[in-house]
Image 1 (cartoon, rainbow, N blue to C red):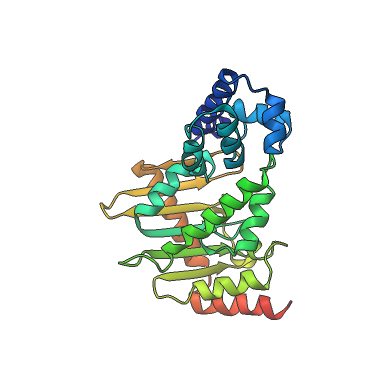
Image 2: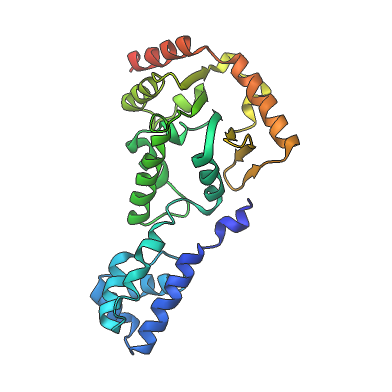
Amino acid sequence: MSDANDNQPPVAWRYGGDQLKRWRAKADVSREKLASAANYSPATIESMERGVRRPTPRVLDVADELCGAQGMLSAAKPFLNRERFSARAQDFMEREREATSIWSYEATYIPGLLQTKAYARALIDNHVPPLDEETVEERTAARMERQTILTGRKPPVGLSFVLYEAALRSPQVDDEQLCRLLEASRPRNVVVQVLPFERAIPAALMGPMVLLETQDHERFAFMEGSFASELSADPGVVSRVTERLSMIRAQALDPERSARFIEGMADQR
């Protein structure tokens, strides 16, 4: 997945915005009138009509009434609300829902499946370019919903997480987040390991990696960067990522020592 695709607004936003503009023009409702009625600026309404920003439920409902759309605009709300993840994450989320096992290594951040709501919101709220408040809330809630995979599947999904010490030292990681890591590691299907600074190897400095396997024994490798991500089923790529993850896991502390490491960090605060 390229960053070019990431920069393209979701199709639902563009279609919803186009319909909003067409209904407004048909009903001879000015952009200023709609903006005033919905308590938004005309510039914001314009960005929604161009698909740059997501048309919000309030704007759609107000426009539906002003333009006499008889529910046609309001009906778009649930379709627009489904765009809760960034475009580059969509394919990965689909594979994650199908996974029977997940191996994850994170060098900088706490993995999404182990994040507290406060930590997740802090990261999402720091998005560049900035997201509107409603989108921040939706993406935070969606990230929390993903965590049902930890204990909410039957049969359970095998989950293995390795966290580089740098991820634990982040200013956003507070006592609540450290306790969350310990709590999440208690179920038998979840393993959490820590890779201390002094045990780091070159493979650990190459960025985050995830391996997923489905019920059909399909294997996928996911590598995420700041501006580009890749989800691959290519056997060569999967093999290389498997090798790197195996090397990192071998250097990481075992689960029991990892728990003591995290507890020690909490005690130092």
